[in-house]
Length: 145
Image (cartoon, rainbow, N blue to C red; front, side):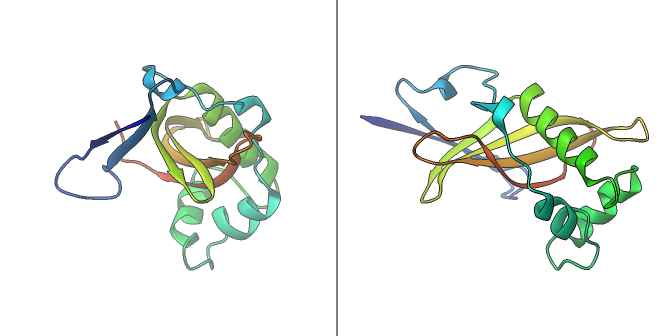
């Protein structure tokens, strides 16, 4: 049997929306849940170089400006990929949603930038139904805390 809890903060804004789907015996029932199998998380080069650090990308351009401002670069794309993997390992999951692509996990928290700044970032990850390693989807800045 599946229990679904919806928590919505008003005014409605995707940045503040928090909808959590939980199974009765799922890990997400525990406060401070971490991304399952985060140590196996994959952040593909193309996601970083052609999306997150590409100022010409229609959806990623603003994100690129943000990450580039704090010392990340296309030439050293692995640095951002590694920071995103650490972000997923060190911060708590704030949202879990069952989708047709698998479970989507949202992680909020600090991400270390090359210039020494601690950025407040949200990242999204998918895990297939067979429970494979998390796949990176996107990341964007959150308001400073």
